[in-house]
Length: 74
Image (cartoon, rainbow, N blue to C red; front, side):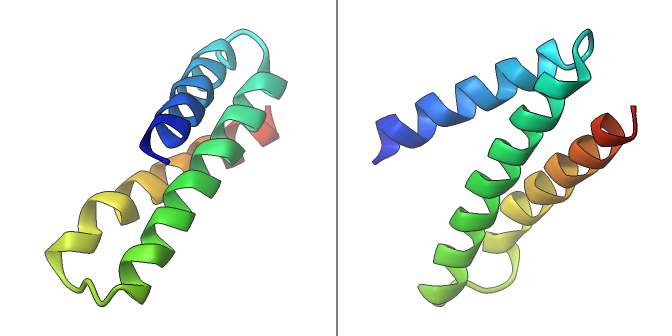
């Protein structure tokens, strides 16, 4: 699972960077990143994590959603 998530994250990050020139790729990459971070955050909450443990993925999810909205508006 870590290899799959790492690969998907790398693809999503590359697509977000490519989105600087092609907004469609940015939307796809940000949607992939948001899905990964949202899924991870959901798993952490289900596992009983609270407080600071959730901060990083909540921040990453918020940034991915912001990139998704900005690229979608372009």
